[in-house]
Amino acid sequence: MFIAIGSDHAGLEMKTEIIAILKELGHTYADYGTNTTQSVDYPDFGEKVAMDVSTGRAESGILICGTGVGMSIVANKFSNVRASLCNELFSAKMSRLHNDANVLVLGGRIVGKDLAKEIVRTWLTTPFEGGRHANRLKKIMLIEEKNRRL
Image 1: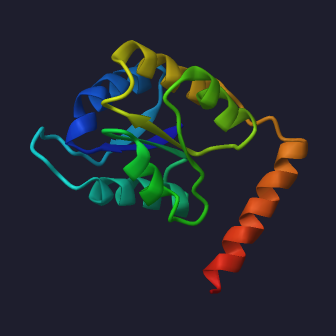
Image 2 (image 1 turned 60 degrees about the vertical axis):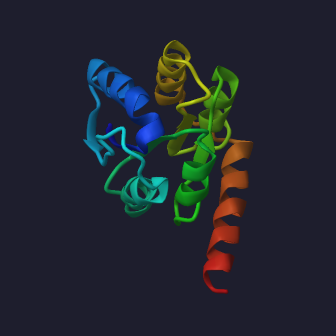
């Protein structure tokens, strides 16, 4: 799977750990930065990852900022993006199983390294269940389409 990944300065250390997991699991990726611990603006990096997912260039995305909230807001501004902030395993599993989330967002200052690795593994290996959840996703897409015309 091709995954776009990005972080701000608060997520840099975690991003490095996650890239190692992506390699271990055999995924390819594009790293959109940041690569510095100096303060940067998270929307700059969230936009790049979300654009790749929105246009289909990347199959999935992973974003990390201090709390994950900012990156979630940015990513969910894009069509075809279903970004889910997951700071524990149950949300990671359910965001894929029921919501077919295609962007995982983590709080670099909230989640420890070991838990973050497990969240990423869980998120990447959990398939979308479909069934009644597919109908719900269609409704979400209709809402998205309706709002695009406003």
